[in-house]
Length: 466
Image (cartoon, rainbow, N blue to C red; front, side):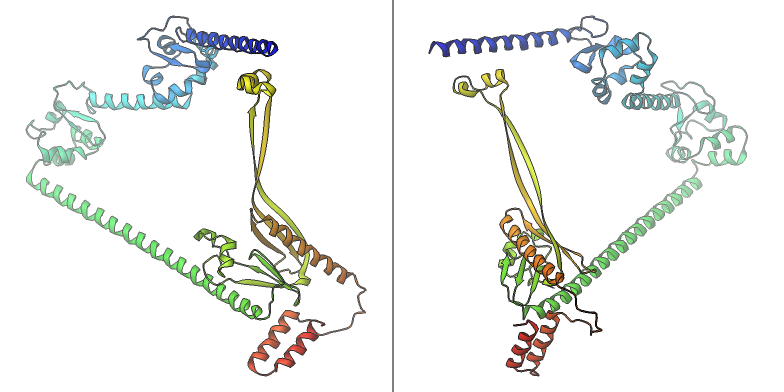
C-alpha cells in the first residue's frame, strides 16, 4: 500500500509540474500580448493593433510605418492575412528590407483595399470639381451631374445661356444626365448643334422626345425579355424532347433484353443462386446475371428487389444468359475503408490515475476497423463484344461473393481441361451453334406443336450428352 502511495505522490508531482509549465507558458503568451512585438511599446486598452503569426500583436504605429493605411489594416481579410506574417519579417520590413515590405504590401487582400481606396478617391475627386473648367465645387455650388458621375458647375452652365431655373428643371436634369461629357465640352467650345440640343432639354418639345425615347426603350426591353423567355422555353422543350427520346430508347433496349431473357428463362433451371445477383444452371451449362441498375436509387436493395422478383427499376427482373464455355478467368475484388482510432492508457495503474498516467507514459493503443463497402466478381470471357462481366455484391454479402467466385473458378478449371484435350485434325465443318440457342429453337418447335414432348426430351438429351 505504501508503494502505491509513493507512486501516487510521484504522479501528483508530475501533474503539478506539467500544470506549472502550462501556466508559465500562458503567462508568457499573455505578457507578449501586452506589448508590440516589433517596437516593444505597451499596448493599452484603446491602442489599435493586429495579431500576427505566433499570437503576438503589432501596434498601429508599426503597421503605418510598414506602409499600411488604417483602411487596409482594419480590413477583415487583411487582418486574417497578417496572422501568417512573423514579427521578424515585420521588423525587417520596417527596418528597410524592401523585399519583406513588398511581400506584405503585395498581399492580394492589401492590394484589393488599395484599389477600393483609389476608386473611391477618384469618384470623390470627380464630384468635388467641375469636369469642364476644373473649378472646385463647394457645398452650396449649383451643378448638374452626368451619368458618368462627373459634374458640370453652374458657371459653365451659365456660359451656355442657361438660367438656374432651367438647369434645375427635372426634364432638363434627366436629359442632361445622359449626355456624354464630350458633347457638353463641344457646346461650351461653340458647337451650335450641341448647344441648341442642351438649350432645348427643358422645352415641351424635348420632353415629348424624351417620353418617346423612354417608351421606345421600354418596348425594346420588353422585346428582349420576351425573346429571352421564348429562347428559354425552346431550350426547355428541346431538353424535354431529348429526355423523352432517351427514355424511349432505354425502354426499347430494356424490352429487347426482356424478350431475350424470357426465351432463355423457359429452359433455365437454377442449380445454384447467390443473393439474386447471379445463378448457375449446371444441367444446361449456362449462367445468368441480373442486369438491374436503378433499384438502390429508389430505396430498394439488390437482395430485396430480387426476393420480390423485381429489377432495380421496380419491374420484372431482366437477366443476361451465358454459356459456361465463355469463362476464361475470374477475380474477386473489394472496396473497403479503414478507420484507425488511438487512445491513451495508464497500464496497471489506470484504475487509480486514469489519463494522467497515460499522458506520463505516452502509452497508446491503436484500433483499426475495416468496413467492406462492396465486392465485385470480375469474369473474363472469350467474347470480343463483352470481354469482361462485372457482378457487384453489397458489402455485407461477402459470403455469396466468395462462393460465386469459387463456382466460376470451377467452371474455368473445367474449361481449361476441356481445351487441353488433343485437337482433332482440322476438317471443314459447319458453323457451331450454341447449346442454349439449339434448346431455345427446339422449345419453340415444342410450343408450336411441331415436336412432341418425347421428341423434345430426346433432342435435349442428345444436345446435353445425357
